[in-house]
Length: 132
Image 1 (cartoon, rainbow, N blue to C red):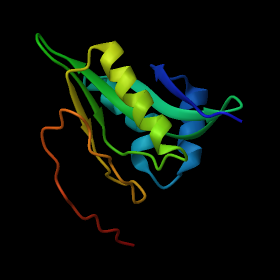
Image 2 (cartoon, rainbow, N blue to C red; image 1 turned 45 degrees about the vertical axis):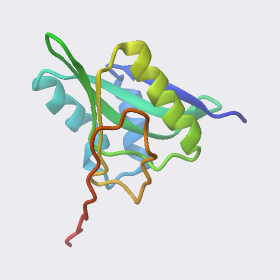
Image 3 (cartoon, helix red, strand yellow; image 1 turned 120 degrees about the vertical axis):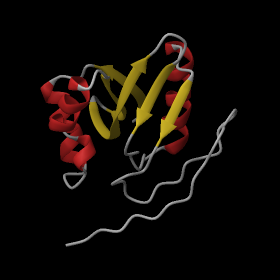
Image 4 (cartoon, rainbow, N blue to C red; image 1 turned 90 degrees about the horizontal axis):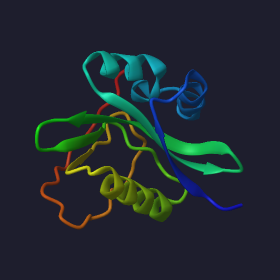
């Protein structure tokens, strides 16, 4: 069982539902959030790891293009089963897609470690509190 990185542009309802089912408590991995970001002018992506044709971890990402830059924002990172494959795949995707600015956040994520990335500009430590 090899793990592979997937980057799905404008994900279908089925892929969106598969992603949302992985962490049902995460509001940033839902079809409603994808649609809200589309209405704001972003192109939606699902970035995921798959095994045997099924998504085992993943997240939504949103692409915005300007006159000079192409920015990819991940609001809520997944906890990848294979972090090396996820990060290698993400960086390859960014390079091939001409992404000049990657913002990787962990809002609503389970605890996740973001590796130090080449050409990293800024990193912030933050805490998140969950209220009942």
